[in-house]
Length: 62
Image 1: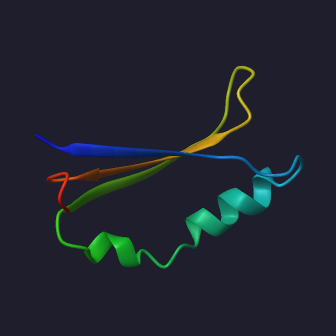
Image 2 (image 1 turned 180 degrees about the horizontal axis):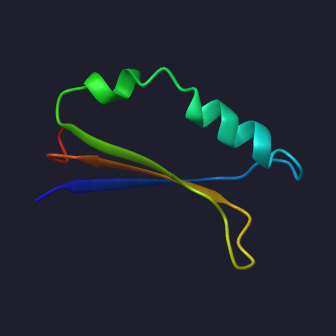
């Protein structure tokens, strides 16, 4: 069973394009961490202003 970590991030209004560009260009260092399975950046929708970073790991310990 995977362990999912979700982090909610808030940014100043008007920063969406820059935030998405920075995440798209990320160094991906976490991708090589032991137990890492996946990374997602979820864009706000339907009245929500926060972005959500979702990472999946093979265990809570990792």
